[in-house]
Image (cartoon, rainbow, N blue to C red; front, side, top):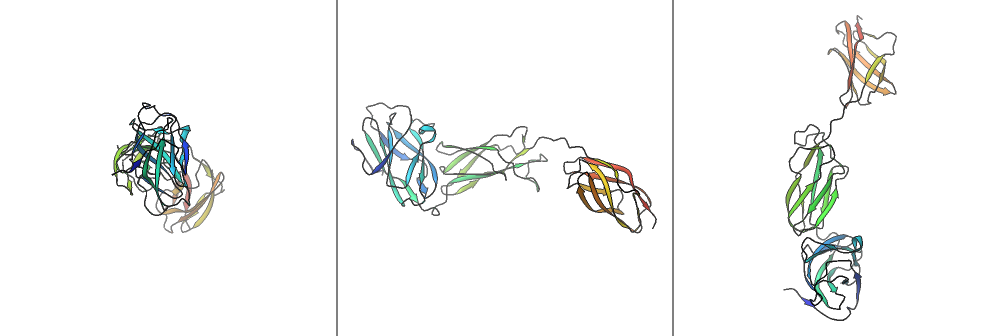
Length: 326
């Protein structure tokens, strides 16, 4: 049973906070604070959105919260109406040292009519009760198979909209790892909607999900994947060996300077055949230092030298190296 009290006078021992514009109610109707529809706890040192049910609220009315250490944050110059005309969204902030316990929420209309919802909000210790929320991950599905494979990283700055069971909408974006978390919502069926990044293609067919959130827990949405746009590989070109004599003897290990443009420091270098291998490659400006080893039984003759950049661009210097007898 809800306890409440009404008075026509001034509310004492509370700090009054004037809110912004809402659709006016009929002047003759007194305000009625019905309930806090979302989870009514707020942690010390935290901000939190609450959805309240109220009737008879008039334009220019005020709200007050009993006690100290908790205040109403007025976003964009006023309160936020909800989809239901008998609901409002209010955002509170509790100080780090806000006294623990229940607080009364009070509304006063311009004509002096008032209502109090006793014990409407409870201030709790910062580590006392887990937040009610939802978390998820968005990844770059580079091969477009709809599965998060090894090496496929998170996709940053993806817009995510979370609508809880009470109609509260919270917008956020993924972080540098592709993760997001939204807390301070009501429990129940929660709709999570993802905005497709520019030039990306959804591969997981779940950019709108309904996630069941249990109060005081954080539910996990399924991973969402987007295939990034194709990027034309850059140009890489092997200009030739800087050594006057680009050959290697059977059984020899030798270092070479190879002039190149457009090569990446992580590029993979190779020599044709499996009996001559590149054991080390160090990029130094427009040249790479290659250490090449030939088996003692390496076949004699000319070999191709190939470079492959991480973006897939590649070049081959045909007959660039010759294996000679020891």
